Length: 109
Image (cartoon, rainbow, N blue to C red; front, side, top):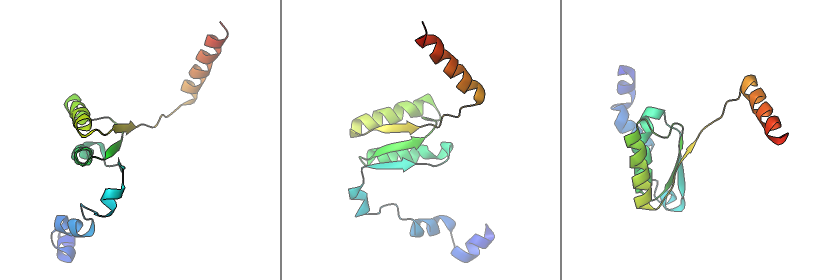
């Protein structure tokens, strides 16, 4: 970290200069924000997005706690926007076989 400080000074201040928080005119032209931060970090980003009147699409999980999930719901409703969650479904051979077997059994009745 001392090397970063020597080169750039305060790393947080440097990040603020390099990655501005308001990219005004672009901010007015977007409808939604895809938030791909690590799970424990996206709570504040999602809330800021929702409060700005933008739809927020987060990577899984929905939230770290049920209280956070309810907060997302409440803020999204108050802002008339959507908070959505993406999840990848990993399928193992066993799950695929079980799914296929269930479909066959349900259609053959």
